[in-house]
Image (cartoon, rainbow, N blue to C red; front, side):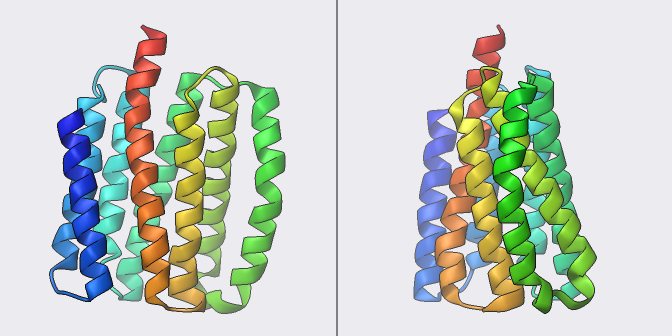
Amino acid sequence: MIYSTTFTTVALALFMGNNALGLGGGGYLKMATSTGFLAIALAAGGLDSLYGRMVLAALFFSWWGDLFLISGKEKVFLMGLIAFFIGHTGFAGAFLAHGVDWKWFGVGTALSIPPLIVVIGWLNPHLGDMRLPVYAYMVIITFMVACSIGAWGHGATTLIVAGAVLFYLSDIFVARDRFVTPSPWNRHLGLPLYYVAQMLLATSITHVNESQA
């Protein structure tokens, strides 16, 4: 797994450097980095357990979401939103497959709902025809975070919660860039959060497989 992690880290560094300098070919570096988190999941034992297979499937849909979001066209952006929606559903399913402590799931839900209300209120005036898809997306990612806390309460590695929360935060920067205030800083801050999140979730497969062995 060290080779796939090193590859992904180097690809991410090159991608972020490319973004900072405004050079061409960023899409290729982005997809190389996304391919890296799939490689990490496979190396971590993604085919060896139900949890691993579900995380791998979620990462696969995230890979497609990354590809679609390279385009600035609204219809392609919507395809990316759908791909990530399926990805978040897959992550939530993986956490449920691991097993959750419902008390901690309740705690996670209670902690996640106030940010959900704030973010929807912030985005709402800017969404237009995208209002319903974005609402649905915010609900599923909130559910995913709550499931991660529930899984942690059931003995899962803290990598799951860290990955879920960082993924949530990275999506706020995507929404800000798309709907509120386009800025290179959205990518400079959001992309590292996103890729670190995916790497943590991919790496969590090893810890979960070992704990369930």
